[in-house]
Figure 1: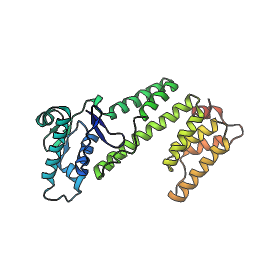
Figure 2: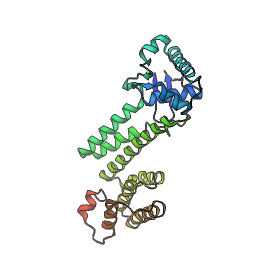
Figure 3: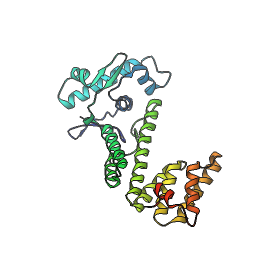
Figure 4: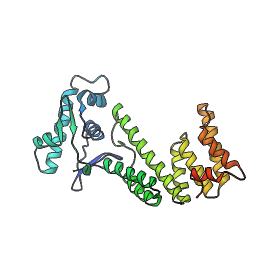
Length: 266
């Protein structure tokens, strides 16, 4: 079976979609998948599906959902529900665990590719790093759990996944800058700024990409826009690092060593 987490969750067997259609059953599967190979306690599952005051019938309903998932997996793979209960969706103390090999779901592969790209960046293999990160980011199919009604647990898991996606995007912009692919870096950074209007690093990346493309005025306007937004909405100013980058770009004869180290020039 193939389990996909990086976007709407889905489960398939030999190309056939076997993702549960029942909302609560899909919610249970989503949390088990988000925490694959780890025990998810019954209280945690009850809280996810029903909140802090589950009905008296909730535990029985949860057992029914687990049983249905086991039957679905068994039918799809030509095994038995007992086999699934022993090897795939197992009872673990006062909880359940979904057992997956790294090759059976997308998250481990994504994390491995990002780690590989970071190593390539350390070795100054920025061109290869952009390719590896492109492969990693292509695995994302949309917003995590967008086809699931998310409770408190899945909401937290979604934030974790979104942060991992953002971090990979930031590394790719740095790799593009290091590889001298400034226009591509501008495009990626613009998208990140639109999605994260208060994130200083992605604004700094856009500033660096624009400056490296010969668009100093546009780079300086990015800073001013960020400064106004942070001041008006949050009552704070950009960090010393971002202000230093802005100051260097203001100079008619900027410190090339600083800008080079910041990735704003080759």
